[in-house]
Image (spheres, rainbow, N blue to C red):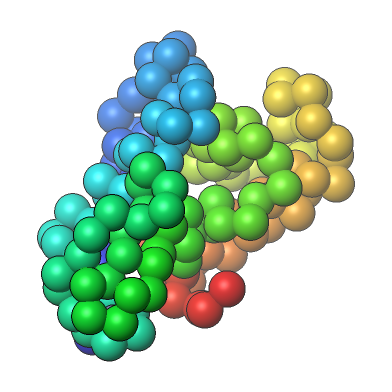
Length: 141
Ligand SMILES: [Zn+2]
């Protein structure tokens, strides 16, 4: 099975911060772009390899027609089970990509979030980019 490329970094890069914040200001918009980026080359079920799908329980998830396994837009990305709101997580990812050297304490100040949250998420983002080249990962969680 071929891992689908997630091209979110380029989407992020193409926007300045103002445009970025206006574009991804709700969790729905974040989910929507994740779904587009993730399944840009079509849907492939991770469990059975099926390519046919129906709508899942939530608006942006997809359900395999053959084995009924559902995958959400955030699954297998760094935004899965994220402890902060999706728009905030997006902004953090945007800022980390733009200036990886920015200390977590500064990020926490800009985003008005906890230092530890920013520190952990920043680490996760950088690790994922180093390993997979983008915000997607292959692990099962
Ligand atoms: Zn399946």
